[in-house]
Image (tube, rainbow over the protein chains, first blue to last red):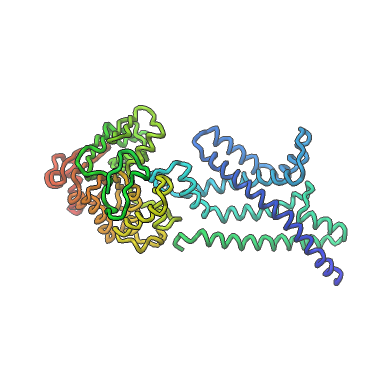
Length: 221
Length: 282
């Protein structure tokens, strides 16, 4: 038992480090790129041009209709056969960004639609263009609405990055797998990995609450 | 307050606040024609909302549109501001732009039309994520490129004039309905428009708050602002209007001075409408 405790303690920091240098940067980068992509896709989906909105609709459909693991494998193991060889990290970031782009697009689209039409009109009547009204008036209000569902997306993403271990990215779960294989203590190490994922997500949920509180300052509660 | 060059909303044509009355109109109320709309038609699907509307607004004039719900009053107002695009007809502003809706309207003309006027909405449509002062300076600073310090000085003077100086850093949700609508009016004034448009500015207010908003609009009218007001407040129309248009079914049924319309309407439809509002229980 003592031995197990010692293994638990010895492996704790290496696994956390795997999270801090692998999981978190991967999730942050993919989420940032994914959000930009999602905003673009959401705006395309809202476009009156049928071709433009059709492209967005198709993209969302493909992303949501295929497993993330398959997307990851297509990019890392599939692309080299057509001559595009990517390292593990770029492959992972591309796959996760595309995935976030698909899911978050629908969240952002709904959030934009939730802002009353009168807000657009008020923007127009003070002389704003579509773009300015979107940026100054609509998106700040849509942001408030979309924080809870986007936090969901982000927390899912943090956990989904464990899939990157399968394309050789050194992150939290891959570090755990190596320790587990080396020590033979699968139950202990995988539970420890679960615990550390959970701790990361607790911190993120706390961040979400603070962000929500900040964005709620201008609404009656 | 010096007059701005027609059609220009640039910084150099805006008068400085110190010494000037912030409520003073940006056009000299000399009774010359400011806006002329002819043959405005608009349908939403099969529903013909406007059937050839003519409207003339002179500088310093207060034109009030009355009529039952669905008569097209609001659509007229929104057409003047470019929020709706008529299917046919023309809108001419003195000094431009001049729009003929028979052909598609270029973007620049649509923006020019919007720039000439400012709208006060029924549901105020203040920006909830901005404080009162931020709401007011947003247009001047972001669109008209007025230096921020100057915009704040002007906005403060305007807020002071409508009795809201102490609310400048409040968020809209912290204000009463009447205060919100007064901020809505100040937001419109801060743009120094040539024409003010009011779309049922008191219809969404509790009855006891209607007076404070109408008072501000009346003061603006007395100062010489040119305005088109859609309202159900007949007493306001009677006191403030230079011309009253009674609309029904997408046409102007009758137009004239308030004294004539309210005491001696020539059209049966006008008479029935006024009766329903003034004596609802008979």
